[in-house]
Length: 146
Ligand code: ATP
Image (cartoon, rainbow, N blue to C red; front, side, top):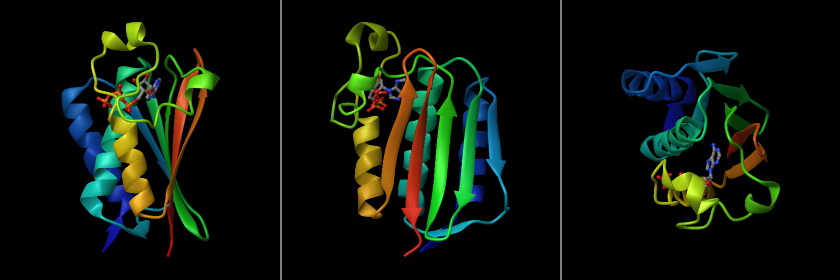
């Protein structure tokens, strides 16, 4: 089934804005970027990433969608606590949480990113994390065109 990523993102952002007082800046070139994917599952991935960005940062969040030749790329970028370099390989494991002391206050089970990774695998897509400890985190999703 094909879906418009731009509309999907806008719907999720509106839901978040009703609950959290947080600026989400959405950057995209076209009003319609279609991908073939399971709408509910991709929505769940976006929710997981935004939920993390809200939990682990206090500033605004930037979201970018870019249509490329062979894939559609969605990036969720925050300016929060970041993830230490040596932890990045672990965060996709089920129940894994970085530094239990600092994550305890935010709550969470450590399942979010493992679910997101599973969903991206089901779509033959990718999920990558680029992060600088203390500066922020960017999660990059890519969905193949076919
Ligand atoms: P939940 O299952 O409720 O999402 P969680 O946030 O702990 O709980 P994951 O989404 O799997 O679980 O994230 C795993 C760990 O990776 C988190 O505990 C946190 O330490 C780290 N992490 C994830 N996203 C970010 C982010 N945007 N900034 C900083 N750390 C992050």
